[in-house]
Length: 500
Image 1 (cartoon, rainbow, N blue to C red):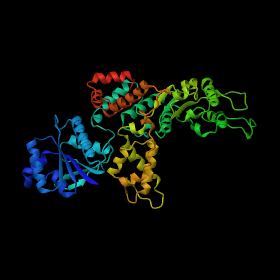
Image 2: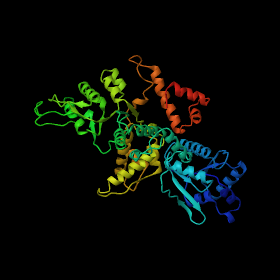
Image 3: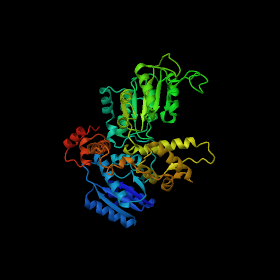
Image 4: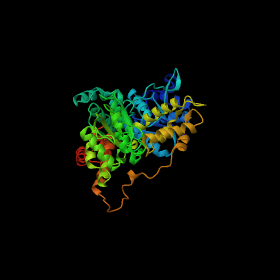
């Protein structure tokens, strides 16, 4: 595995090459002589003459390989240009090696904004070791005692404006109930904003999303942020109840109402009265139970099996499904009238592969959780994770989403013999990927309900949303990422495909 040092070429380094006796070696040469690196990747905004002179001087002192990238900046404090240049160089470096590398970012050369961007990249998209150097203390690992929850430093500068935007949009204040939902991506930010809007109301909520995306976690947060927070929150896995028992489990039964009913039983609706009932995998409900559920929602009352006396219930319903209920309706497996009752507020949870920048945060939080859970186990060793191992996790597609990520980390912690989880441990822990149905868009059979315009819309919305997410809502930059000639074309596509 190659160890690669990346840094900007700073003025102190240039002065060191001309007068090392008085200036010292400078941050870059000091790092190269103190630690072993297979390659140094320099980013220079200096003149070609001074840059070439520095590289020649550096090579005269050390045989390390130097890879140079010229990046012109309008100024040494322009965060946007610094960020984009660093990402370009990092991407080119990783593409060039096409194998595991240990990245190190040097914070000392260059301007403070350059150092800030290195910290952000190391904490988000490109996990790396951070180092700093000085004549007094030499070269040492930089300890950053906080996790920066942004992909791009102007987000930090925009916070006061965003607060004003939230207030003017009528959003409730930041709700601590949602802090357990770890995210920094724009797409998850929109999800949380919708959930915060709907939480104080008692309307039904339908949460759609693939398995493992955290639908129950979001439902619990909505309940905790609602006026019903002190009342029950009950979860029902609709797919785990035998079809003949669904009605009894939801609405209850009287003693003797059927064989085996040896005592009166309250159903989930009664038990959740005044609170929230979470129907997980609601698409699994059999049609007869769907009829009874529809009536309960319409009338606000239920009947126990074997009773003719209605029972008034006040229940806020949150439903979740990993199916597309509109498809289930077209196949006759779900009632359209029930769907429209459940789908008053619809929240779509994105898969982990579409949550740009979230995986690094999740890895840190989930590893903390695993360490906490394992403290009492024999032979417990607190686990850390290497930068190369985290890179593997960030680039994995995660068909099982957050649940798969958590279980992969659990396996890796078990296989890991030392304190640090390596890329080899992660490879051993990853499960073989099965067919990814979301990618099978080019090989669908002709006929059989094929809708070409619908498929094109799916692809368009996917890439439009990704571009907006990666550029933090900047439509001009998003248009460039997608190859559009101008901002207006991108806006027209957003309107055409109703993308957000």
